[in-house]
Image (cartoon, rainbow, N blue to C red; front, side):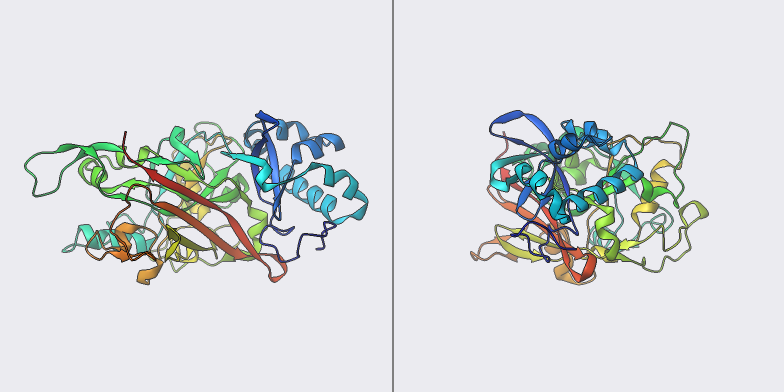
Length: 407
């Protein structure tokens, strides 16, 4: 696939084989948010281009989030991608396209979806086993239910923020096992979780469920996700009902959403699932698969981990099928996340909790300082890449955030 844009290399990680969606504004119209697509190192004002062409779905792109476009469903998503690729490869359309191209530095990126509901899963066997070994050293690493269902919890959608947003260190109660009583104050064990977020479209009714074989028709795309975690607050509060204030203060989502179509070459079989899941979770390789996405986690510029998403135990289709099996409805703009991505090797663990083994094995950064958990001023950047069409690599939009002192 050859672009008509002379400065767009065929192997650019944000080339024609990718075309991720986002929402942007400009300094000239700071209050006018609309849908754009990243093309190389520029942003195409897709809302304007589609409006000029008077395509049927152009109105959905004029909105300040992707939600209206998500509601259009998979047939429109596919049609829009094909239409866009045609506009970018046919020399006859170049005069129409070029006026709507903006340099990245000219735009401000916003949260790409107005998050309706947010659910976070716990789908990595390596992560769950590491956490279990840390907190239950004399017991089973995995809980008895872990290989029977994708474990998850409902998070706080209103505190999902776009990449680049500063993260204020949270306050809360914490109590170490040896302390006589809890204390209140800033978290001292602030952590990150390298995850993949899945953006949902195609609303359903309460009381219906989405079969595992149809689940991916509701998944528009993926975006890198950092579920910031206050481990000390979490440890004191999570029994018996699970994560609450230790998670709900902020979660960061990348500004660019990679369409699932762009990841067709990244499909991989799931690890062997033993025992075999119940029928409602038992999909085929065509409908329930893993993704060959490799993440990189950097703290203040130092690469500290390379978590491999391909090792995840539960597929996105299984997660979404389980999410709805009780009749819970889907909304356009729902977001569900994978949970921390961790591999088998120490340098593939996707959280500081694991990388430092609960603070007992500090990591060293490039400036020779050490970390067990995050300090004020630390910046975390998570990036990723995946196989794309024609042997090219896709570079997912990064997710970043800097820690500010508690207020």
